[in-house]
Image 1 (cartoon, helix red, strand yellow):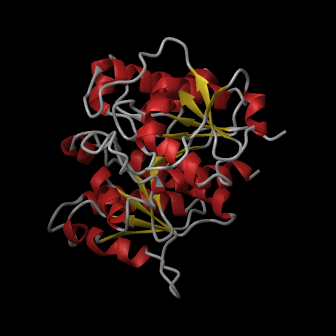
Image 2 (image 1 turned 45 degrees about the horizontal axis):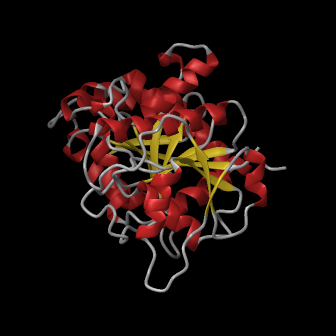
Length: 345
């Protein structure tokens, strides 16, 4: 029997629970074999908020064991109820209780995936300020999952390097640094960090694509430094890292001007794109181009973990939470990608 796929509910005050419910309602064939991790009352409230006039309610089933997931009928939301959750939180309000609930769901799902009990996990959005208020020492999903994987493997955090990739049908980008200030992100552009990012990208995409990826590398400075006129990071740091991995067979080239490399890599009808993925030097440099193409299609994938984890590429959207207008498209694409990645040997 195939292992099920876990979907965490996200921050209960945000749109996470309602896009989870919407996905089970609107993509029943894709969501077969999936279940939600969270709180039944929170997800029932979310299911109610997406009901249109005269529409039947989305039924919820509280699971007693994971084997039951395989027998769930379509358009039914199976829920693995975690003990000790605070339950429904006021819509659109940041709270420590909501942050604790969100973190508990991710921790449980990560441990289940690492133990081989689930095939993959898809994480609905959480709120970083709520995590901090709850005393969670990690700023987001990626760092929390990295810590769980390191703990499971019995290694130091530094021995479990991970990277964030955002992808849609037109563009993939991987980041050298993630959730840090811009000042710290610039400091993180070191030979070792760039080299490690290129190696992780090569290994992960070689597996998912079935061939070595063509990696385009963005510069840090305008015009990729213009030969040192606008900064020397390209000359002293990025180019040597590229040469080091090329000597080991990685198909990486650059650094290229950041304002054009993403256009060169973009795939479209009748055009393959020059690169399979772009390695960006910091968070916004890499994420803005992908999100501009449409947040309803982007998927966040964590590379380097001994498990498959994907996520929608948007946040908790407190301003529209509970109004029933959130779009589950990105979550549905995240489920689709998680299933595809977990099916690969």
